[in-house]
Amino acid sequence: MPFSIYLFLVFCFFVLALFYAVPKKARPLILLFSSIAFYALCDVRFLALLAIEIIFTFYLGKKIEANLEQNKAKKFLILGILFVLTILGFFKYFNFFVEQFSFSFKSILLPLGISYYSFKTISYLIDIYKQKRSSEPFFTFYALYVSFFPHLICGPIVRSETITEPLKKGIAYNPELFKQGFLLLVSGLFKKVVIADRIGTYVNAIFATPEAYPSFALLLALLLFAVQLYCDFGGYSEIAVGFTKMFGIPCKDNFLRPYFALNIRDFWRRWHISLSSWLRDYVYIPLGGNRLGKKRQHFNTLVTFIACGIWHGSALHFILWGIWHGVFNTLTPRKDPQMFKKPLKILAFLLTFSIVLFGWLLFKIDSAPKLLQFLSHLICDFNISVSTISNSLLPFTYSNTCIAHFLTTLAFVFILFSQEYLQEKGKDKELLFFTIQLFCVFLFCQTGNSPFLYANF
Image 1 (cartoon, rainbow, N blue to C red):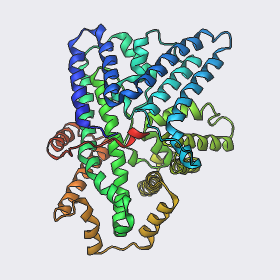
Image 2 (image 1 turned 90 degrees about the vertical axis):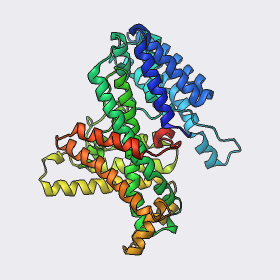
Image 3 (image 1 turned 60 degrees about the horizontal axis):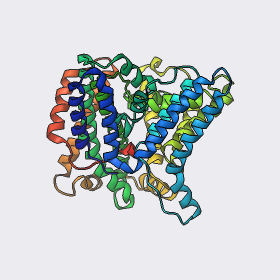
Image 4 (image 1 turned 60 degrees about the vertical axis):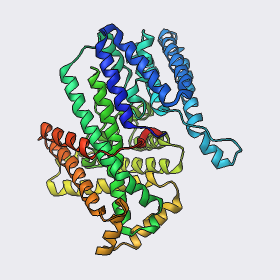
């Protein structure tokens, strides 16, 4: 669904002003009504579905807690998980089965945020069953946890106590949290509207018809897609976490400089942290984790990453992407790569980034023939010359300004990764990069309705 980030910002700032204008006791209600209004504005057709899932899992959580001593809680937990997964599976995978078996059914739309709020409700029920938390006594707080509008489009998939506990204590203005949130907001906007949206047009053009461009353009598009995906999804996550903090609610980061990872296991400690930790706690560990020997551990890892691929979508290429990462996670040695000497660190970085890059190719291209065609053209026809480079840059603007456009894009990417490199070294120049990014957002932002890449997952 096309979605304007600028309208989203206007909505968020309006709610933020209203939120601090009312007494503390009324603030949770402001957030809940705002979340309902936000979902209705985005797609009112599925608002009832969201409400049904919230109401059902709220009361089922109470049933699980009430039956913990009678050993009936597991039945209610299974009922809740099956209920949520059935709804998620129907909407997310119905079209896939219709296409595979040529059924004469119309395709159905995917409700906004269903993958994110479904995982939230499942974790809530499991946490009650495992007695990690008690059932939420306040329906308003639980409903707000599931539907909290900054997290609704693309996450993060936070645990229930992240939202409910601050609400119980009463949310007051916290200047330090507000400052952290605003810094994240500017950083996220820089990633999304300055870098990701600028790159998107080029990436889409090359991947749509790779045979029409030089092989160098394919390599450039693949590298830029890796940057685009990170800046789009990581940028939204920073915006979401930023507004969460500006509302006075502490929230953990969802990304932690993932392209500086030195092995695949390290990459998944940094990429989409809320999803990877959710899969670890609710899939990998219940399967046995690393407690049942090496073979079983490898099996559990592979199953977890297949589940990760399936969560992203019903297409086979998502499952292959999950298997790809699962295999390399099982092959990754336990030794901490930070202990390596510098030459080995550089090699580890290059190897990890190459594995991730090929994974993004599996993630992006949705059929084997297209993938083979892309790889064949990229590898077999690869050459570098002045003409191939100039022809590879033309899709940026299809005019004499393409080189300038490409160079400014590289400058923005350089600013981003310079900041992350300094952060990695513990030398963050917070004020300097905030000023640069704010300047870039005002002067170089891309306008128009640019959807978030992860809004469809």
